[in-house]
Length: 416
Image (cartoon, rainbow, N blue to C red; front, side):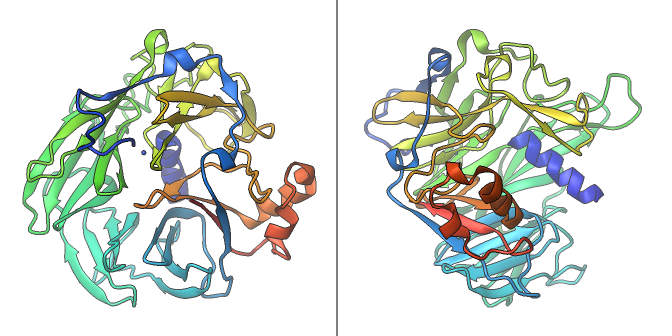
């Protein structure tokens, strides 16, 4: 339970870009996205305006393939790789048929202790696992162990990673500390543990009160995403998305800058502590998703949110009681028109795009592929409850869920 709460904290704190780094169209500097100018102009986003199709994949449910709470999803080489809270990675084919599970918990040379993040090599389908000790363990899709890459000294607590090609890896980390040392850092290494590049800064979420004897948890790790051949990095507390230069230096250069204008307040960098719901301050989240024409972004709008709502929560976090206020607003940036649209909730209390292609649930991506496909998932019990209580809002939901049982595996949705 403690591990579940810990991981949930990380997800809450971190709850990707446009043109290529070498784009000829943008060669005079980073793109500026005018968030300040978009405030007050809200519209309902329809999925068909941004994507051509959506496919629902019902994952096979057996005693061997039953998933716990999902941590990561990768979709490459015609297979879905899904890791869960039980430190297991399940592999399904693109129709949802269960292939195998990989769970090698232990201290042996072919094992790992805990999954922090997964990635897939799109050239061969090999699964890569970042462990809680910063090691990277690689397996073939058959489950056969390939290799282990140990972590360099002083790496901190690993959070997320991304293979950069040429056997180089970007590892994002965070730290627990009591002093005024750098809070967040990243390291780029090769498979021989040579550190190619590293960095740290003082931004972060201080999650204990001043003067507390308990260690401070400072978390604002970089999220990395790939679109095409390019890689991008972003933090919640930073108004810039960086392009990771695809050369031997892996230098991070500004790629997109979010103009928050009068809504920028560096003293409020996150949801925590205290939430600051009464402030007209905007924070962008660090997770982004991209297609050839659009960038999908989430913002914490706080007092500027037009449709805030409360939800019950079991999370015991600083400034957080049994009821949490949701002030998140989804945004979509049109790269051709250079315009940001902030979205209304198409259904009350549900943020995202109206799924008007097949009449399914409100859609917003939580994962993406290197090809720009957007992925989300819906837990079976949530879908069944949705059909019973809100069925009139989703014309195709009954057909999508069919005879789904409450204990069945989630349904995966892939839009392209």
